Amino acid sequence: MYYRAKHDLPKRRVSANELFTIFCEKSKQDASLYRVDWIRQLISSLEDTQVSVHVAAWHALDVFVKSLPKDELEPLVVPLRRSIETTGSPGQYVPGFSLPKGVSPTIPIIIAGLTTGTNEQREQAAYAIGDLVERTEENALKPFVVPFTGPLIRVITQATTYPPAVKTAILSALTSMLERIPAFVKPFFPQLQRTFIKSASDPSSVIVRSKAAQALGFLMRNQPRVDPVITELIMGAKSSEEGIASSLVLSLANVVKNSHENVGEKAKGTCVGLVLDAFKGNYDGDISHFDIGVNVT
Image 1 (cartoon, rainbow, N blue to C red):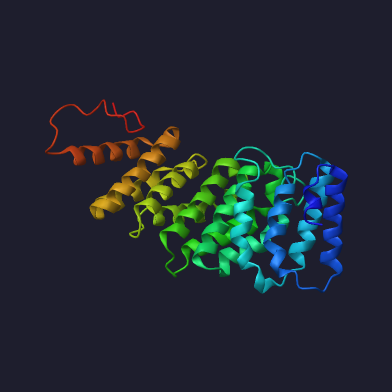
Image 2 (tube, one colour):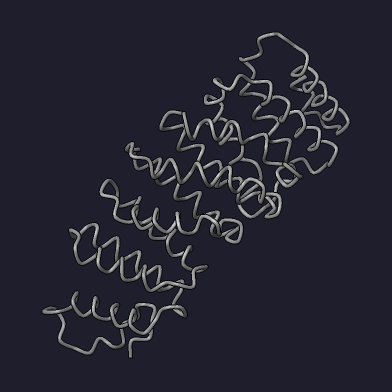
């Protein structure tokens, strides 16, 4: 059945997926040893150009995941993410993901990994969300924005300290969503703004801070009120130790670069003041030509 799903003839690939669907619905046999193999096979089949094949594969995947005990989903997170990563490519829609409810079979596994998994599983679950966002037609993603975005924010803002790799993966996924589907993420903008600013001063990792700076820049593309964020970043930069201050200045640069038309005159002046302070005592010339993303002259 497994090897038949790889057959050259589309009708045999369809029949293999249909047979596996029946097996998942009816069989009581322990097939846990083959779960990873079928995850890989069914996800890759969603890329099949034959509509009958990727539809049958999607149905098989949906029934398969629903047949699994909820407390046994976490071990499938890593193979699921690896399979998604190697299916299609960023910016190239995978036909099976872009079906109505195309992403839905992956949600129980991803959310289990993100909320109750190990640190590695949390990391890979977050990256899986980003991979799906980059491979799924925008309107097909719309029903899943809340199921994905809410847990991502909750995990990264929990009091529990997660390693930088987990935080970076979550910020990466959120950045992909802001790049690809900002209109659908709009209800989360206030939470995302607080999350990114806090992460931009995370003492655990410069990589986390840099990723947060990038994410904040993308968020500000879609925010009309930028000045309060600029003020907060400048105050943070002035009151923080050197490493974190540098990251907050990087965040400021990303904000100004992505929203310069919405930056008020007073905020521009404050940015210039920050530059003057940085060069005070080290540079005696005219700084009006420095490009910080706003017209300072």
